[in-house]
Length: 593
Image (cartoon, rainbow, N blue to C red; front, top):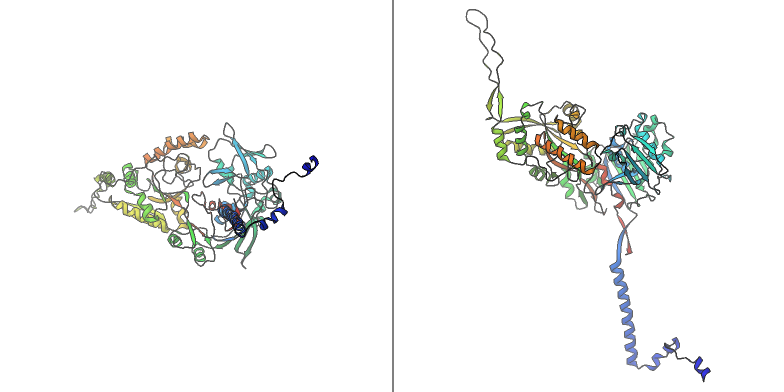
């Protein structure tokens, strides 16, 4: 019995053979109920699986597609040593090359080829540690030697690089296999801005003599380490480049770009580029003229982007060409009679930003609490009403004395007699002959007429503007554009050393206290201390009213709606519109989260 029990242990679960016998012991009703239950279970499982896939399936960007853009101009030197002098070169170089740092639209300066950087206590030495996984398009790893070569080439007069002044007095050292240091003669709060310059591969450029660098084929067939690499270009019979193609760099250290191919076509001017855009020969255009913005905005197939530029439009006063502008009350009255917000709305439909201060929102030292003389027509009229205008009382020419044949003695030079300003003040407003400046000048003309100031608008062609207006300071009022960097040096525009024809202090502004503050701010590496100094500088400038700050410009640019995830809110220079291009995409694929 024990043996039988040991081999006949009862099973807790039926065998497959036993399950097969189940239909024979069930009634027909029980079988139908069982089948229904089985189908219900299978349907529930299928529904759960389908629901899971439906709720967890997502589309993600994938490599593919192409984008064609029209550029105004033609490539000459797709080389960071020379690219800053040509917008087309700058656009293409920004895609092909990468620097130690890059400028993020949201984060400012961030590490790029460098994975980190640090500054010495005295602020004179800045060190960078290079990434280990960065390679050039030819497969060579990016090394410290490449950084040393690039900086040496910039500083070498034989290369004739326009970047040379920015690196004057800078020593570049190799600390180890991955660390490179820049030693400055004195601390600088703006030097980091220069280190977004692209790095050249020394392995190929060192074989080219410096004097032959502008002639090298590598200027049109570049090798960089950026998100896109050279593919091909085409020329016409005259040798002009018609099109240029880049392809995605699949070995890019910061994640590959999604748009596989970028095509660029070149046009001699903005009008021809816009014609090509309207006829759909290109999908985008490098810049949209002011007069075409609304037409582009109305197109359903494109997305209009208008990111802010660090560019402010300013009304400058020149006291040397019109003595009336030496009167602070006159300058203040003009400032109070101009409604910046109305200009921004009426001329630009609110796309530009009205400003009041030398620095723009988001910049170190900017404060929303600082204000220029506020819009106040009543007070402006009071100021103008109290102005005294020298008026010459000229005596009639003396007649000959009877009987002598001689004329009477010439009267002494008449003395100007101050007369209350019952007549209009008159000023010439000089502008560059561009539609947007013409529209803004007309609006200023209308607003100043409300305080009895007459404005004559003088429009000068763009190609003559620098030589005939800026350098000789040949203006009374000037509507000008001031380009600031992300971390600007205000001394370029407001220090007295910049008053000459080679400087950018267009108003001829002089203030010893401001000069001292500007010099100190330029050498201060502490962000907090620099912000405090810049606030003091702006307070004094706004008090002296050497100019009226009007609005911050935008950069009109359009992309086709087929390209997704295009975020362009703020740029530093036009080529920064490509700052996030590796995140743009056309093609997608489905996957589960």
